[in-house]
Image 1 (cartoon, rainbow over the protein chains, first blue to last red):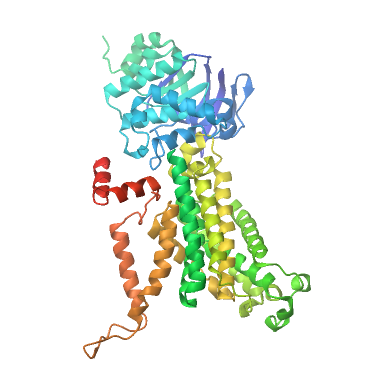
Image 2 (spheres, each protein chain N blue to C red):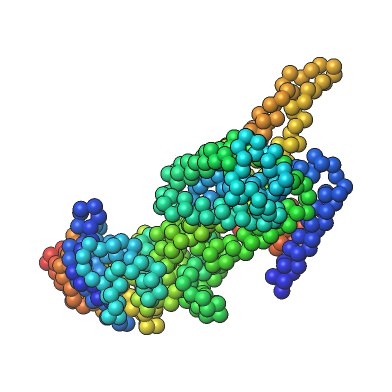
Length: 237
Length: 356
């Protein structure tokens, strides 16, 4: 579905991505793990068109989207849940969701989708009229996910959804990710919480300082001794 | 049901206000009429400025320039052709426009459109800037507009200004413009465009990731704001009966900045309240400018200029206690108003409890 080939991105002379290729097949959960500064967020920002690549190619359903701007990319059905949630904090929960549907014009369907999201996150419905900034971290993350779902994406990219959340809430979020995936949406997940992320991943990539150093099914990587040492905090036996 | 009730209440309020405007127009003296008119004109320009500064979050200080454009279009085209040689006595009017006459409403709209066009030309390069830089750039452009006007002698009569504009002192006329603009901006803010503006204010990156075209929306907000500032400026010119470049110094912009900060950045009803408070407040404080004798002693503080001291102190107190202006980003709604009427004492307490 999404294909990235030899992607190079640099910020003022420093290469953040040094030629990355990856594949996101339809209907799967693909995970990308890596340390801080490995280039994970840069990759997502480049796919959604917020950052322009130096070279390389991004294609989506066989069509090249490298040169498109974010508006066009969002209409093709890709959406981003940005790092640190970035909900619109002085707007109500409902307004946040409506902005998510900004690219759509079908009022009746939008209403239906809002109901659907409230069904999935009853907490958001309770806080319908509350300003998003007054929600707890976990609720804000739910809102960010809900907002992204409002544009009816086929591919939803999440940038560290577990950032700054309590372990119990993280469990919730990952359960929701699996639920969304079960509804047919493809997910590209970026995480530092390698343990959780690998458990639900169909396929995973390891990113280190701008290069992909390893890939495999989530289970394989979980059992890989190098990964266990570097990301899961287990000592060598 | 609730929506229908609110709509009826709003229509009733508008009719009530219009009746009040009618009353003010015929039953009060010209001083009160002037103050009421000025309140409404300032409300229009406050609303227009709130659209860019409060709702879209772009700190622009170009309002005086856009007002000048609107005011000058009204000045140039509504002076009766026969009177023009007397107005343009230093240098005759450019023959291309010397014979064009427009009724006031047309001149207002042309002035607004011209202001919007200039906003587009200015906005294209300038709206890529943010925060303080945008403020400085728009401030500069507003001065450029004023200086161009000062030097285009055959079109604008230069530093002499244009007098003999048919005076407009009809409260109902200005009220209709204010009401229409108020309704338009309310509808705009509640549409998907309005939500996009607010999303840009809150977080540009998240807004862009939602597929909102930042530049297009900033430009649109800037142009609509300039359009209404142009209309407001035109009404201002018609109200004064004369336009002069010195009326449109950049200090004029700060009046409106004051109005929107006081009323609440990002609140439509706040801008209206702010406009009335600032304009009428300055007038009612005039008692402090007059000498006061108490028990046969002249109080030395009461002299011309003292009212500005009082006004500034009041502003400081207001800003200290209402950090986000009187309304913040909230709006007046009928539901809240009814809740307040039913239980005026419990209203504020309940709100506090809900927040906690």
